[in-house]
Image (tube, rainbow over all chains, first blue to last red; front, side):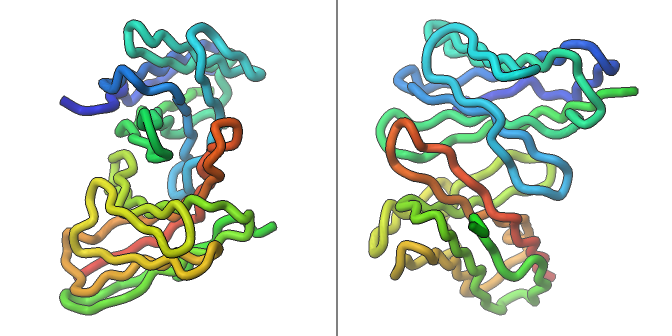
Length: 111
Length: 114
């Protein structure tokens, strides 16, 4: 069983729509969760981190965490073509600093 | 600040050759990491370091070696290159505190082994 699983994609949404990206993880003790965005040919960049159950909003991005269900998601409101990228979910190990990454979901926002 | 820098940007190696991928960070981060990313895949941790003089294996360490003699530098060594090591290699660094644990990535090194 993969430690971090993401919806396989690719995901295509029209401009202005809400894009929903999902991630499940296997380590029930994990406390820190991250969403990275990676444009083609570029390095990952952090867009959201979340540590507590519930929602965390930052501009058009909302991260949602449900530790009981071992589920974390990223919503992108009013999607723009510039949001087209691969989104990587990462979970920090229970003790230490290592991250485990999912395989990523490729998002395309069509004008 | 330059952040995390990596050299070279691209390299072609022949099977059996060796090379060192360089990584330097100027943010005084104590933690540093090496990942590889195969096409269409996520990041796999190769080695990491929690401070100068301390290194540990990640998920896929076979065929690689690292050293950490200074806080700033964390080179990755490939001794006998194999086609399976064709990948994009990313170096990253972070603080260790709970409130400042974002990993910052370098631009990557594309390696092709033929």
